[in-house]
Image (tube, rainbow, N blue to C red; front, side):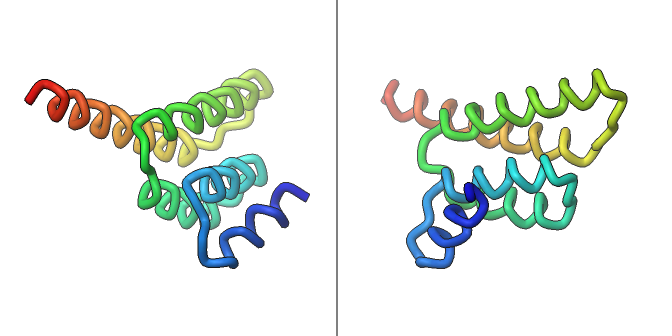
Length: 101
């Protein structure tokens, strides 16, 4: 149901960051590396606020930690997590730089 709703919103031509982030999280849960990569690119391109990827990173970290406890390695998911975190920090730093001016 969640997947269908996110895909419908994306297909509508007016998706936002959260639609892509939902698709990303669902792809990680499904262990679908190709869909994860595609969704990550879309999510990264649609970030509007620095805190948006922080939320997704937290969710991806929870998934990764749960899998680690079950000894299920999905190394490519950590790379996506790191990239989202980097982008959010980069945006926050830029915003703070603008505020100081």
